[in-house]
Length: 442
Image (cartoon, rainbow, N blue to C red; front, side):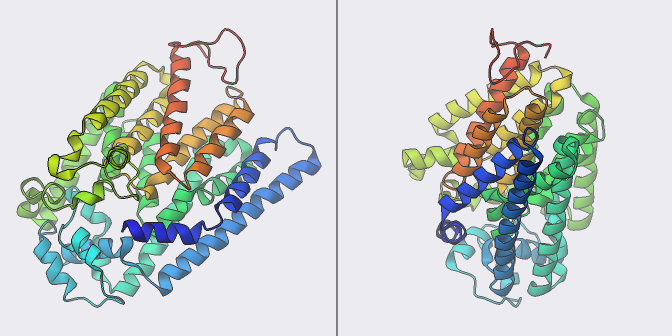
């Protein structure tokens, strides 16, 4: 899969400098939009629309290629999960995957890597996660593939709408167009679409939990998000730190109900197999922790230190434990200390921390940072952050993602932490600076 990832990225971004230049033009046009003359505003809108059009063409070619020449990564993984579950089989038993694979018709022969990483492993997530893929098991490969592409396209469109509504609606139409560009120009969006990942599906409950974070119903969206992607389990920390006990209660009750439904549909034995025959602990190949497509903190450390898996679990790597501990403590403390009016920042820091610390965080998850970018731009629009600083930061985050998404995520975490330190008054500036969060009253 690592080789496949590098090959696809090479095709997508063969001329990286051209894409980076396009990103810079796109962000610069929006940065100067409000302060420019009517003529230059028109020019800026033209540049923004042109950048979106170019990326739409590229994405169309990606989708077209996926349809004409389907790949095993990652749709076939989801397709297999759905077929094993739809046949009423225990989706934590690799033998059932081997049996289903031999009985279905596919347009290609799966590789040895696919057999090792998927068929010999079984379902890798919490039992309710299977509902995300169950419907695929009732269709042939071609039909299921088209339905999956349509579903992801709908979820991408809805994600664009919610990010605009949450952060950029005050900019009206230009804000909506710019939000579209934020999604389409992000290298992680191209990766998610190339690998046909479910990124935009699990982004929806994240955005809804964000929108209703002060209401108990947010707990329902947190539970649904976790049942779509284990990465979002980190978000349960938010109601605990913010003392949103009703939100936490709604989450727990929702998880119990969803778990009971899962047991009713698939049986107690299958549900408990996750705990007794956990595929991640028993069957997952070690190299998945360190391959390039994995852009988590753990994977980055394992690659830098050339970790020897024969020495023990990579999760116990001393450098990882130390670094993860520092990041976690910083995040939890600041999320707890921020005022109620800064609850969006508290949630944002937890989201980026989840992206850093989740051991299975791959480059296709990078679109999760777009709401955080939207929040950062919102601070710029409220004149709390200098527009040029925002331009530099966002340009760096988008550009460096072509080479190392982890660095992009980590830089964003640092920026959000600095803002939180200023807002809580832990650090402050005595004169006007590029960031104007000088006291806890701001």
